[in-house]
Length: 227
Image (cartoon, rainbow, N blue to C red):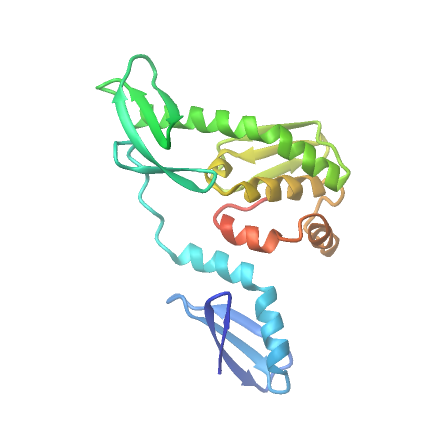
């Protein structure tokens, strides 16, 4: 028997067991073992509840994309949309400007990849910092909690983190490359930690209340996760 959840085929096998088990094999195939008496509707409901987890694990099996070289012709993401990059001669430390649908990177002719990357990251930071205040205000109103401060850090393993004692939230610089809904979801996630520090059942109940589309947004995020 096979079911398809969010476009993912799942091989289902009924066995003489008491609990339901879900596993992903190294080849990327998804297998589910269920008790013999469990209905197909119940199996589908369980698989659907684990769709986010399945997506995350499948993404981890995919080889990571090659890092950008910051040369003309590449496309860089801003809020989930790709913009063609054009490198033009410039002086100083380099700067990036988005104009008429093209990201212009002004860099010296002898600039290194690291120097061009630093210029793009500086521009990314500006874009994220300018977007945070309105999203923060909206999310704080929904959750009913205020953070003492929100900072940005170039994190690779987390989308966000919260120091509950200091009421300080850190957001990953990588969020600026994701669709806007991701920033809203991660901000909400971290604010909820001010109500519930751990990822307890109560935490996820609050996520359902304050950010009902979080499962869909988590599929867009993949990679690092909020804490």
